[in-house]
Amino acid sequence: MIDIKMTSARAVLGFVLPFAVVLTMVLSGIDIFIALIAALAVLVIYGMILGAKLKDMEKAMANGASAVIGAVLVVILVGGLIGVWMACGSVPAMLYYGIKLINPQMFLPLAFIICSITSLATGACWGTAATVGVALIGVAAGIGVPLPLAAGAIISGSHFGDKLSPLSDTTLLASATARADLYDHIVSMLYDTIPVTVICLVAYSILGAGYGSGASNLSEITAITDGIQAEFRINLWMLVPPMVTIFMAVKRVPSIIVFGFNIFFGILWAMLFQGVGFAEMCKVAFYGYVSSSPVESVSSLLSRGGAASMATTIYVSLFSGMFAGLLQNMNILPTLMGLATRHIKSSKGLITMTSATCILLMVGGGGQYTTLTLPGTAFHDTYEKYDIKPCVLSRIMENSGTLIGSIIPWDVSGIFLASTLGVPTLVYFPFALLPLLSPFIDIINGWLGFGVFHSNEPVRLTLKRRKDN
Image 1 (cartoon, rainbow, N blue to C red):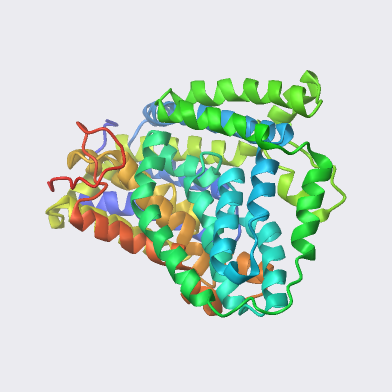
Image 2: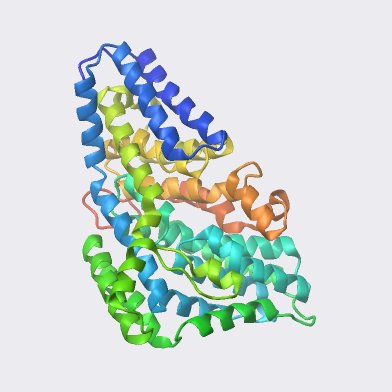
């Protein structure tokens, strides 16, 4: 600990000052990692005013950054894997077969499924909505499906993969800042994703009944599948690399080994099936895949990946770690958590408080990256105190930080999706079931004891209830 006297008032001021800087800068449109640097500078100045030595604070920041190095390595490898999977045809094949599922009579549940497959394959909510989603909105208009219903199904499906895919930057960031194992985080997410997905499929099937009987215009969908087929050799063999990754993940192989091995496996697959040279594939792994398709929607959807594309996530993870290390070693967080936990009598109360905090951050304009970083710093030690694994904390952060923004009209995600799909946020809001319901399922699970993992328990999907603390 840094040798300074920390009172309750000083701790509150030490947290509020840098947090206010982050919130103000994010609301002004400044990138989160720049906001975190500024907050870090404010916290250092505050510490010096209180008598802390600069050398001690530098050591605290270095220790905080070193705690997230493992997660940063995973982020880099995932960026490379995305680019390689694009080039070898795995992601294009998943998109191709998913889009082929379109049936006008079951448009809404199929739109949800197709966007789920696309976002799971690419790890991109906005990318899914802006490409496949836009095409599906055009189909919905052509077959007489109300656009608010279609937008709700598209947004829900687009978020499905964004919260579950190991290729998603938000999935990586939530697990990194909460210091949760990536696999544990994804398995933990299933505790709310599975029930909400079932609700979505049933609700969209009922809501969509009676629509889709008019003449359908699938030209935009056909353009995407034709564009994919023109650029890649598409067959079931392209699904082998993802299957190998899933198999290794199920066997609980360390994530660094899984992603590192599958980068090289994907490179060999691309050389074998797509005729791409080794040197070119190495560039793809670092810089990402750039589609050559003349179809704009296909090019936009497939041009992504590469280790370099993860720079923002890496910066945010490192500076978040430094921020956490300083808050911890200045005794700000322990003091604040001591105040907060006086009113928390159980893990139920802790989970409810965490979820409420994340929602308030989002409604207050903090944005997803603020919600995916600060609560992980603020609540991590309290979860340890209650013997709850950090994957529960990361799940709550993900459900609020990644999802809630899409149903808030003034959040950048809500603004983007509304303008992209041509449906106002408050109009599609009631039908965006996955982002709408996930945080509440989190709280319900917390009170029922489902998915509340303790340190002596393996993180796996089970109907067993956990004993409250």
